Image 1: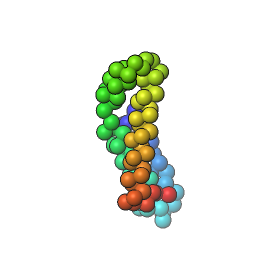
Image 2: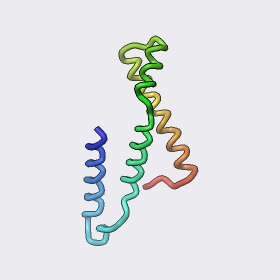
Image 3: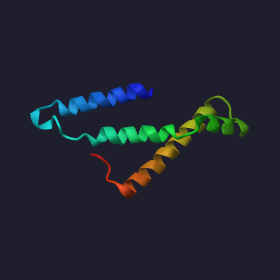
Length: 90
């Protein structure tokens, strides 16, 4: 659920910035990075992935595995591109 994930990220931000006065305005790039990953996953056309899996004769769990494989490929591409242009948040 994307909304819950964003709420989780907000809780992480509050926790990180709520650990003392010196941290209140400290940037939390991990949340931005996670949001970018989420947005990248939204670019996948899962309906098309499922249709292709069905055309390939896949059923049941295999269809889900096709979606998962596409998501992982999407993440791998995103991380490769991200690393080439920016430093990963720590």
